[in-house]
Length: 245
Image 1 (cartoon, rainbow, N blue to C red):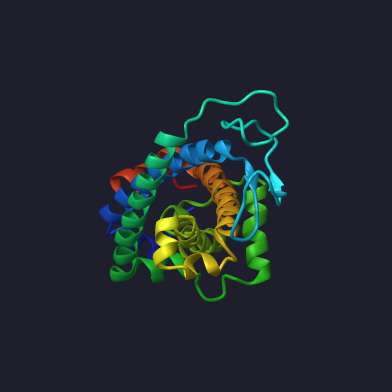
Image 2 (image 1 turned 90 degrees about the horizontal axis):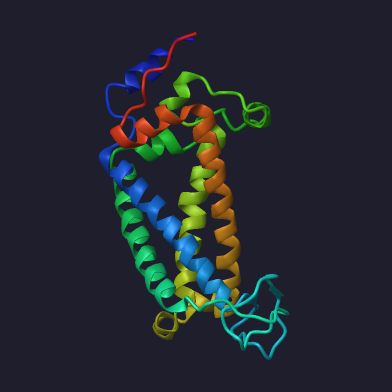
């Protein structure tokens, strides 16, 4: 299948600019670090609450069925795990700030170069239920996307990326700041908008699960669409040439 002329014209410039590629990999590495260190932090107290306060002497909103790394936390297990809370908190906060700076550079780049309008905003007429259903069924049937999709995103991808960029990542940053006593002391509204620091922690946890779902779906779709081509696109700027059919 030949690539449409409009798509061919877009190949005159890189599919992904250097700024987008660098910030993508910084964010990917930091996200892995955040997940690992975040898990270690949760293990120190795998109970979640709603409101401002939360401690072992009050009922939890829910708790994870795992042992804790602190003996004072009631989990139902007769043993505790090794406490990794010190280094994990330090690396978690450092990784989060790297994501913030990478996100700012990404936002400036996509807005200045028109990338946001061309590749992330859904095109007119593509959000009809019939079209979205067709794209979704192709994904569920594990059908390999056509070559032209290496140069742009389909409507479901655009909606997913917009949800991550405009909602999930900002929510993660905000709820993360809302859990910081020093930050909320200066800006109390950051936690108050969620109902308290413990509410922010609970929302932070569920937002992490949503991002993990996106992460694994993203990896699966990259493999399905052509791992070598998509990786080359995000490393060198353009996807490898695909055979026409």
